[in-house]
Image (tube, rainbow, N blue to C red):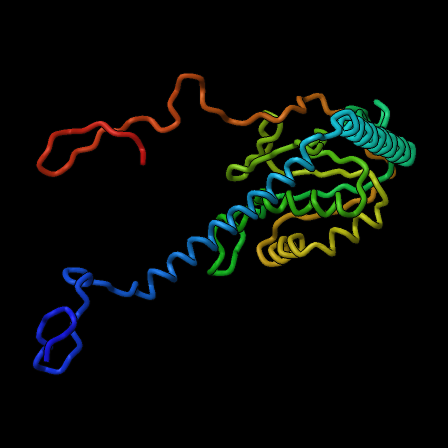
Length: 283
């Protein structure tokens, strides 16, 4: 059998390919390529819409009312200034009220509190002294138990202040808030002077209240125990008139300080094993 083109039909029975299809291969585009095109178009559209909205918002906000904004801030600053003035007035009012309710003491009261003014009046005299020497004592007693110590004097003075003493003297010297005394053995160091027993404390105030405050002190009671055991001296006397002279010493507090130019941690010379001396500072 002969085809119209004059070619013999294929023996396998298939239809012959057209002449124009010779050497041409047609392929169907894959699915992912079509999806990519759709995604790109969608993103482009989204960006276009978003840009249009942004531009529209900027255009809407661009023409700002600057004079109105300045006036708003000025009004706000004025309101804050008024609040500050109100608070300042409140502080002044409270300060005036506090001062009127608790007036500052005058110079006379300050001098009195500092012990610069002499006082006199009824009060109490307390005398402490060492135990007599060469007196038989219990075996456990040592020589240190036979003398009046600093803590005993401190206990008496604190108890008298607690009992409402208006003024006080120790060995005739005025006791003030800055008074510091020290006992070395049976020698009392007070305001640069040395005293030996007996030690005399005098307080101006109600004698009964002063006496009761002494008896209520645990530290005083411990001293009285040794009065009974080893014979330490103790006596109290009610006085119709006690003289407390003014304090004439300095009231300034002094403290130690490092002189200028002196290092706080001086260098030290140390030796390390297997090496010579080295200079170093404190850690």
